[in-house]
Length: 363
Ligand SMILES: *[C@@H]1O[C@H](CO)[C@@H](O)[C@H](O)[C@H]1NC(C)=O
Ligand SMILES: *[C@@H]1O[C@H](CO)[C@@H](O)[C@H](O)[C@H]1NC(C)=O
Ligand SMILES: *[C@@H]1O[C@H](CO)[C@@H](O)[C@H](O)[C@H]1NC(C)=O
Ligand SMILES: *[C@@H]1O[C@H](CO)[C@@H](O)[C@H](O)[C@H]1NC(C)=O
Ligand SMILES: *[C@@H]1O[C@H](CO)[C@@H](O)[C@H](O)[C@H]1NC(C)=O
Ligand SMILES: *[C@@H]1O[C@H](CO)[C@@H](O)[C@H](O)[C@H]1NC(C)=O
View: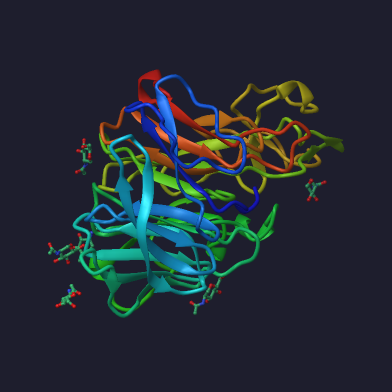
């Protein structure tokens, strides 16, 4: 997956009023499933990544390399949405993706490649207090976003997702490297910044680049969406166009309920989820099972990638769709996944938003 190049935000809403002369994007408008409308909210942003509403309904946007901006929105009677005014809340060029707001709206959280921070936030004034550092020691190249999630089920905890340092990162094989891991940190027990590598609760390791993380509000189950490896080969054959799957991973619960999945290795960098089994040499497994990358031998085998040794994905998506976020609705009966679409496929794939109904028993 690669960075988002575009500076636009489109809001997708359940069908309400019919579109009437709202602003339109300069590129072809997204095509939508029946029952949905899309509204262009603004194109006046620089590398927007995470978005969150504050307690007064302003939209907080983290602009990568710039900081956090509050957009005050105007909802017109004809259904159009526009920005009536905006204000820079935090100017910090190190911020790049993650953003959260505490449930009562009094804290703003954001992240750089190296650290997770928080500020006391006034939604009334759109101002912040001095910055407090929560988690450090996360710097690495390549996969530099640090997605943040606050749990409803365990309000003390901040979940941080850290990616790998390259397409295939050998250091991620060592749990003590801190690479390609998702960890949870107890903010109520904060006593100076946590070291990502040596503290917190390990929710998952062997997760290459899980940019989207969310908690199902109905069950407390935590899921992430993972960007799989590029340029994949197996026994000398290039299989990258249709393998491996991007993944939806189930990580367990944050409220203390036991899950077999919690803290397990999810496969990376040795094991990946099969999509197009017909192209994988010497593979006898099924779609959705993990298999070994590269040259297969006694120590690098599909047995090593089985459920006994590696946590399997809950669901696979088409290779290179590049999922960048997952968000449950309040009822917890569907999750939305946004896909960036990828460079690493001869046929363009992804660049869409999909709803995964919980009723399908997928999640
Ligand atoms: C908001 O929640 C924080 C914990 O996240 C707590 O410290 C603070 O007292 C709460 N503030 C109000 C006004 O409820
Ligand atoms: C908001 O601004 C007003 C007016 O400047 C000030 O009196 C108040 O203390 C501010 N509140 C917060 C929470 O920053
Ligand atoms: C930061 O993480 C590295 C492993 O990546 C570890 O060796 C080092 O001790 C950590 N540094 C600090 C200051 O904790
Ligand atoms: C977080 O730390 C506080 C204070 O030590 C403790 O009371 C609480 O149980 C911890 N929460 C979790 C989820 O571990
Ligand atoms: C965690 O939340 C789930 C869903 O509400 C509940 O069934 C479970 O009992 C909770 N676990 C603990 C340890 O509180
Ligand atoms: C097995 O393959 C892996 C990766 O393809 C390689 O690193 C390792 O040296 C090989 N082991 C043997 C015993 O050939």
